[in-house]
Length: 51
Image (cartoon, rainbow, N blue to C red; front, side, top):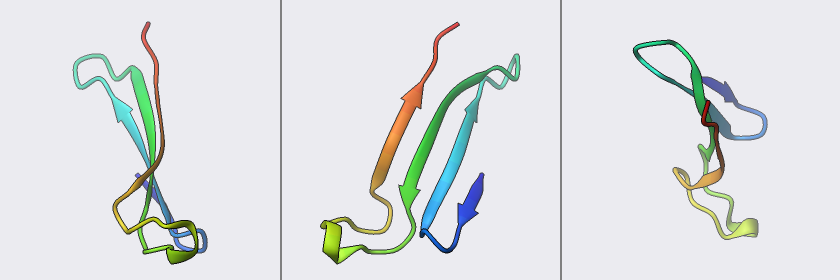
């Protein structure tokens, strides 16, 4: 997990617990952004990979 305090985003790398393979990446808002109609905890983007 990496938190970008300037952009108010949290980046979460999702790994397979058995193999350590990257399964996905999630970006979530850490602060309300009324201008964009989002709240803290809303997911901005999510990507998943299958190998």
